[in-house]
Image (cartoon, rainbow, N blue to C red; front, side):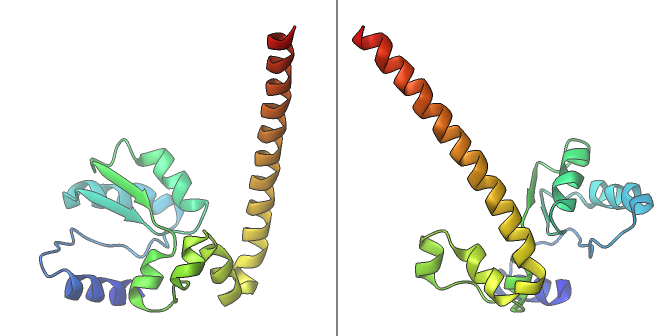
Length: 145
């Protein structure tokens, strides 16, 4: 998949210079050598497509020591670039529901993760909205007194 993505990116952007690549499936004891490769690459941008939450943890541990000015987790972007996964139609994307489209493509792999994380997000959002409403009603009482 990574090889396909690289070929398609270079074909689409002929002036693109790829400083290196790695499949991302390395053991914890190999992490230091992967970081050494990244530092030695001279890359200006690093796109990390490891699974969640592994990529976030990797970035948190190493982003400041990699010597790369721009580091970004890109999820399944390389799967899309390589043509292994289809993007949602533009209308679905415009409503912010691409995650649901992806979940329908790979329900066994994604349903539990998306439903769990989206429910957590909904709970956090509901809590914040409730706190905002409570704070707003207190503020309104003070003004009217």
